[in-house]
Length: 209
Image 1 (cartoon, rainbow, N blue to C red):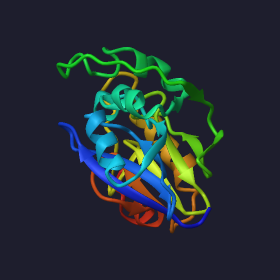
Image 2: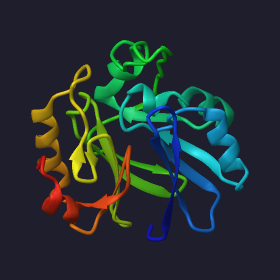
Image 3: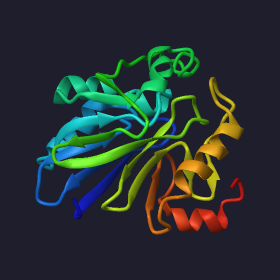
Image 4: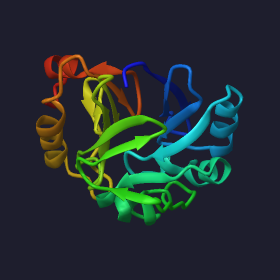
């Protein structure tokens, strides 16, 4: 699977990173966290002859899902999320969209188990459950390409907030230490906000860990 490429759009009121992963020379992409304006995401990718083959959610907070239903409608791509995040995705109070002034829910077409591998358009990643930011937060790991889509679990020199519904700082730190810091140091981390980092860098410089 070596040879995957990754692109990014920053969208919405929280400047959320919306990533798309694709094989060089192919048109299908896996889209992570359609933060807002699903029509814009679809049209932007289509303008580069890219087709959304799957929509993967790292968690269900409003600023990561607001574009999901429209993107699914336009692309026909199924939505995937971790099974423990079902309540957050489907409850506008728990996912904080109601408090943000635009109540919104999304139902995944498939709720995935911890450790389950997903192969979409010939690209394979593994769901790593990392509860803490929300009870069903997760990351997606492309082992052969050394890429981790970390959502709001792990940031450059920081971690996700835990003061929103279902959050827990102790669970978050434990998730990162037990599930992420065991990955190779060279793994590139692509977080839900801010710039990319590596597992090795966070081991050395992340004061929360």
